[in-house]
Image 1 (cartoon, one colour):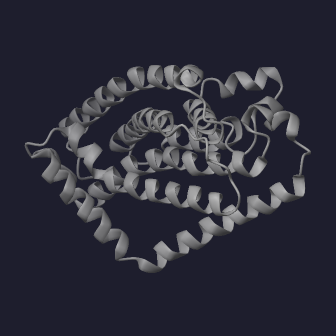
Image 2: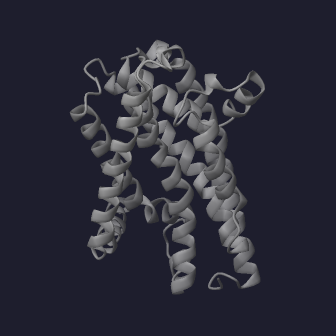
Amino acid sequence: MIFEKALWFIKRGYLLQMSYKFDFFLRMFFMLFNILTYYFIAKMMGDAAAKYLEPYGGDYFSFVLIGMAFSGYLMISLRSFSESVRDEQMMGTMEAMLVTPTSTSSIIALSSLWSFIFASFRVFLYLLIGIFLGVDMTHANVGGALLILILTIICFSSIGILSASFIMVFKRGDPINMLLMGTSELFGGVLFPIEVFPQWLQSISHILPITYAVNGMRHALLQGYSLGNLAPDIFTLALFSIILLPVSLFVFERSVLKVKAEGGLVQY
């Protein structure tokens, strides 16, 4: 039953996406444009940042490609759940969905399923273009990368559900989204190694899940680290997931009860 519902949500997301074909191709073009921008920046840099990049294989383009590709999951997580809540409220379908036999947690998960599928498609394109431009992934630990990916999606989705909870109650001005969107690329090691920061700033990086996600992905895909070597990043992401997922689902349930009691489900 849940599988059938998932297919319907995916179909709905696909049809909505394909109804704006120009937007789809525009996104693909700017993704390629973005990749090429960093490719030529890496060419210009040469070995200038080698001492910082040595733990990741020494190549800046490979480093930043993985960071850009997988940080997309955080952006999707922060946007898709809250945007789903906002869209359903604006269309007046939120109340109808929440009174169906499907659990609230299933609804919020399924409503964003297509967004994660599309994000995975984009990651695949990132990696494919990267390989075409010379990124070496011949020693990749695919199993380790998949495990990190699963934990990354769980962890990021939990943050996204917290963001959606805020939107459910307050409608707009979500501080979770603003805070993480603004700090993750800077402090999460997406575009450059966190080792360039002074020690006191690195402490900020260490409390962000994205730091461990992109770090683990780089070591798994670029250097083929074993599960044992990937264990610190895997353990930290698992810890984030174990704490954040139940907390986020609880907060969302409470948010739904609050707006139901106030009669604000259909208000935006």
